[in-house]
Length: 110
Image (cartoon, rainbow, N blue to C red; front, side, top):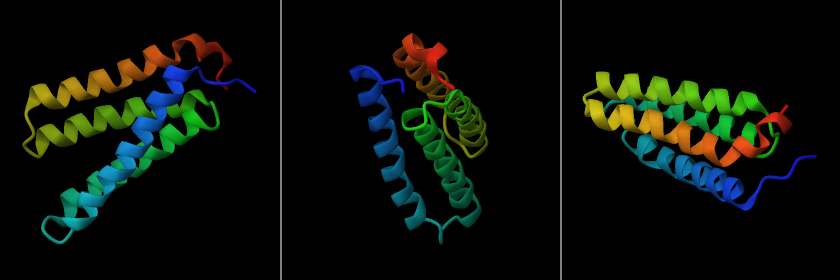
């Protein structure tokens, strides 16, 4: 089985932990804006599943899920009032950094 390098492993763990922690405030504001909170929570959970697929199962599908969630989050953030530059920057930077840390293992992924 393929082993991640230190940089990839650290990055993916950071992404996993931070996205898991970001679910907490979303759950807390669910009463204030249920539709927005539920959509955000669903996107976070799908993103966490993608990170788990990539980190533990070494599947390319995990990366594709991350990319899809980034695009959907950017669209959702723009529609819900987040700045366009911030939304687009995060949608581009997150998958780009992830790809850069996993690219040496790309052909080994299932």
